[in-house]
Amino acid sequence: MAQPPEAWPDGAVDDTSAGTLTAVQHPGLSRRQVLARTRLDFWLDGCILVGYIVAYCFGFTGDVIHEWLGLAIGLVFVVHLTLHWDWVLRTTRKLLRPRGPDKLIYAVNLALLFAMTLCIASGIMISRVALPQMGFFLNSNIFWNRLHILTAEITLYLVPVHVALRWRWIVAVGRRLLTRAGRRGSR
Amino acid sequence: VKFGRHLVVVALAVAVVVVLGVVWEHSGAAGWITPPGPPNGGKIVGGPRGGKVISMPPGGHLPPGAHVPPGARVVQAHGGGERGMWINLSDTGNLTSTVEVVAAVMAGVVVLDMGRRRWRKARRAAAASADPAGPAGT
Image (cartoon, rainbow over all chains, first blue to last red; front, side, top):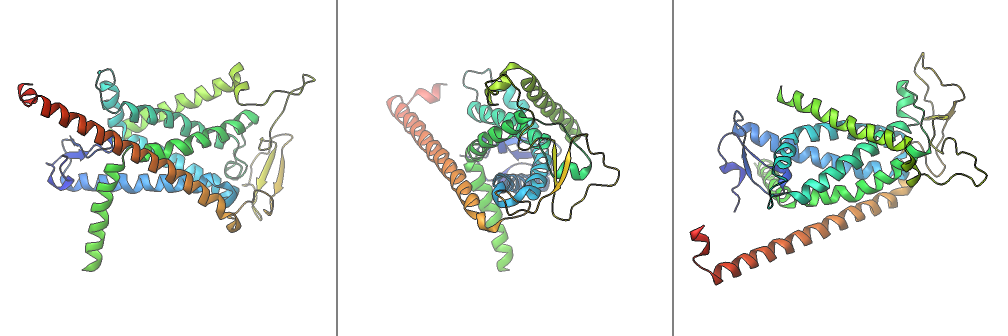
């Protein structure tokens, strides 16, 4: 069974993308930095999930919030990818092994990379509010409009799969963060 | 330094995907997602959200010195239509149905994952009880 993060040695971080609490050695990181990184991953990923759900409902948000929120999600998406790039490299190397782990997660993540990137790029191409307000005018056509709708639909189904494949990590870290916050609140 | 290096690689990966999208737009495969042209052989130019119309929120204006491309119109949208500029609180059904879809997909994946883990555990336990010396020898 996996150890709780408190019991990990210095420099170990939880492999957030694997869906399990697996300690991975990261020399040079103190336990405090590891915990800060876990907290950052948890809240950043939560923000992307909530942000995407809200941005998807453009009938509710209206064009202005839909477009600016979409641009913000694009930036946070790049940060999220950057923070997990180690996992991408590690898993890519293991893909050829017959019993290599995370093949399903890798496939979902790759599909999500394509869908979300094209969704944000096509959203930028067809922007009517945010980009013109910044002084940019792109010559879009119906292809980008259709691509935006299609990739948004695909992303809507891939995002919950991507999140749910890590439910054990989310439950473990969420329980720890919330109990700690509760303990601090009761003092 | 490591974050910066990874950021550059991620930016390149994102750029590759965007370039693939542009290649798709200019290839014959673009027809997979765009509707067929009119039967008289004409072309569909622009779309409902094409670059020909620039919508500004109520009271909004273009930045000074902004260049409006030839043929483009700047319109002030006032909401009230099917799709407004600002939050439409009467359309919360849109939000709740999306949350329901996301929650249902998540629940399905979690149930499948739990079932798979239980099945693997049971299979491992059965294998261990059938051959108690097996794992020790490996």
